[in-house]
Length: 361
Length: 247
Image (cartoon, each protein chain N blue to C red):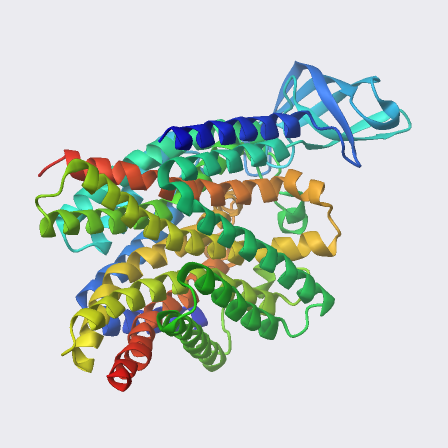
């Protein structure tokens, strides 16, 4: 018990030091400055063409440069921002910012935010260690491995310059699933059943969705609305959807196959029909909440844009098409995958756990 | 027929086929959830108070997800109580960290999408960012709360002689499994919405320092961690609520 507490405090100190060190770090390629004073000068009421009132604020900022050739020089700049802070923003005293200096003119590029990222990761680590202790390493390792894999896949995608996107993300999904299952489950028959169920569900769900898209001639899908697209938005959208639903399908396959495995282990008289019924009973309980998890992640993302579109007097149908429709489509395809996982997981349990049990005896 | 309508119908058919009556209820919960999000956007765009509107919509969304997704009211009651408390804690955390992260509004990458839109629409986008973060975590929090209270109630029913310390230990064991799978759902859910943005970063050769200071990255990354922290907090809180509130 004492040792556990010691580890916790050691970690807490380490995290605190890391956050503070990141906050004060000036070792960047870009120039960094600190706002030494911020004074509110004026506020001007504006109205846009839709009668929306906002206030344009002006503040006078004094900045001291912290690194590189202009180090310790002081600059005074004016910062104009709309009170909505949609595109521009206010700056506060003591805030650290990235700047550009050209011809004795200082321009603020971006606030320094990395220390908040370190702080929130620290908080997560400490909470995890306190609550579930030593076993958190597996979760952390899977986060780390999958993120590195994600990074590699993106680089591969860029190397292929946006061609074969669907193939790349299909192979990537299988890789992601294999890594995660081996890490969490180890390599045995149950894990093979879970992996098979995951791959089959995604395959059938995407096959079915693709068929529907072809049959309806992709009517009403506005690929133009894919945000930040730097390559063919259609394949990008499919890649996004595939990756997005993968975790949920793995989650569900794990739950169903593990529970069915227990039932098969304890009841040697179990028939195939009973297995299906149990699989359905477990699946019914988890599919609804799982669909909602993804749905909220995909939809909440588009909320600011939706509000902005509506605020600019756009029609509801137009707003929906350009901001929410792709999120809804992504959720629908994901939901189909999540529902299809229920029979697929039962089927995988039947093939890998039931039939093999007969062979062993 | 448009693709979306066709997909909606196929999904309904599949959910009824696989889930029966429970499938219909789950389907309904998703539809209501969508309508809630859309009404929220509409109300805010009409100038309704953001905090008050959110205070009404957050419990409504939790109620929809939990009560339409679970059959047993006993499980639903406990789940609602614990997910609502966790949401309150997470909200405080989001308010503090979002203040320091200073990442309001839309990213520079949205440039093209903003053509023709007012850049001073008279809405508090800092507050909207906070609400977006809370909404994103609601799904993960309520899913974990339902799984957790279902497991704990089952445990108490099958084993009435359980001592307090054994009960807490089992609670942790159940929680660990839930956390492991929930983290995957959340992580890949965000990979799914991150993908285009990350390809953008790589194509334009952003440095590591540029990425982790970028407004959009910070927004998205923090939302992802808020969700995981939410699921983590569900574990002890649900264990506490199930053991102390007997009904």
